[in-house]
Amino acid sequence: MTGLMVGAVFGAVFVVVNAQSPLDAVIVNFLRVAACLGAVSVIAMWFATVRKERSVAGPRRNMFGRGYLVVVAAEAILLFGGLRVLAAWGRPEQANVAWVAFVVGVHFIALAPVWKDWGIAVPGVVLTLLGAAGLVLASTAAVAWVPFVSGVLSGVVLLFGAAPFGWRAMTARTA
Image (tube, rainbow, N blue to C red):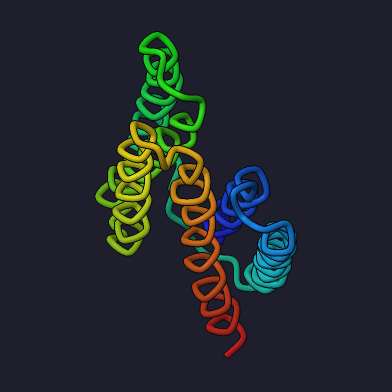
């Protein structure tokens, strides 16, 4: 559940930060409010699940071991190094969100075997593709759509991934 909560919060941040022109102002506000409500619902499910899990204390696997740390360290290097490279190449600022989506997607794919959870590879592949699409768009006249394609849609993927799995995890523990 902690991973779902983090994913939902980052998904909401992706939407809130990147929902902008050329989208209509009404659509921008709707997307931002919906993203925040989605993140709040996953956070609420997290609290409900944690409360129930405390009463059923048992051995838990450590998800944040050496493999996780290696993936996160590589992610940080790729993320910040790639942003510097994009700036050095004179790429439009919109390419940054595409790079972030790409790296976050690859991070999920790399974590799948570490966590032995291939379900997280699916949003990883989608985010990677949305990031790659944004990097391609950044070289075209459609550059203004990069924040929507790589930012908003990536946030929606994270939110739509977190909410149903959060609900399933919460109800499975109460059943």
